[in-house]
Image 1 (spheres, rainbow, N blue to C red):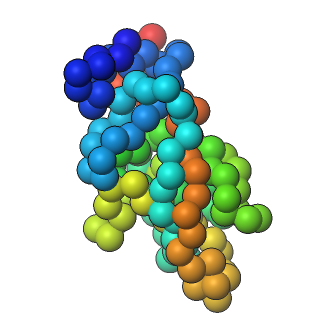
Image 2: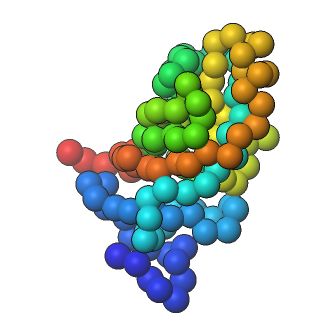
Length: 133
């Protein structure tokens, strides 16, 4: 349900929603399109992520949890061979606003990735804490 006067204040259901992100630093909200522009970079530091999972190429992405909470499944377009579906498993002090950091195994390849403008859409949001099934 969209609140036209304040597009950052909405109610999302887990099963069906559209996503829009307003100004950088704004939280998820309902909107007219599911695709948004993000800046993408890459990292190669292997290890345990903020979610407790191990980093995995083709699966792990870091994001600002105020924008894309840990556990959010996203689709990324415009990242060349790294376009596809990811799960936000990580956060980072330098990942702020509409930015994602894609995990790539090879450090040289991560550096070569550079910084790209990509399109991101939310597929599913994480289960709310304490949610009952």
